[in-house]
Image (tube, rainbow, N blue to C red; front, side):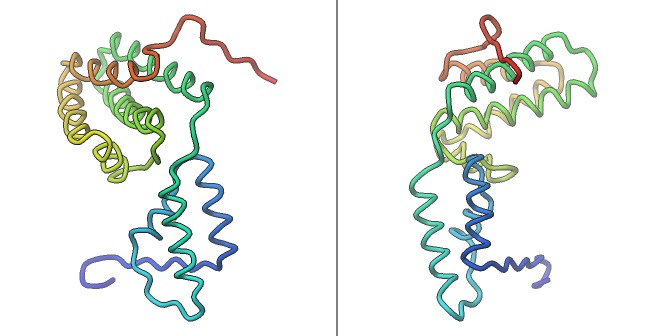
Length: 178
């Protein structure tokens, strides 16, 4: 602890850092990259920390890997199913989880469509607001309304995101197994 703030120490070699980051980059969501870009390097005896920080900055600047059409369809299909679940929901407990999942998935789809890095928690809000200022606030208000049984604005926000990549998807969606 430093005052009332928890302090975390992440110790890596160049090799161990790359292993973690490569795994995260493939998912377009790398907490470690963002920590190295925005965090504070406390000490660096051999220069590896500065090299990692520079590499992290370059990787973030290069942008997230492009989403495939299959991934976009899968995301659209899942969100379409959640919208249908919401339309038929009269249970407050179920509504809570449907609405929160819709909000998260809509924000992630917005980032994916725009070729941006994904994030969780505060980073999800920061990333969507970076490409569309005020989006997380609008989404927040629509979630509050939806939890109170007034889902029209949330549906509108989510449909707006879906519209950026083809809209809702039911008809024609198909995935086969191995």
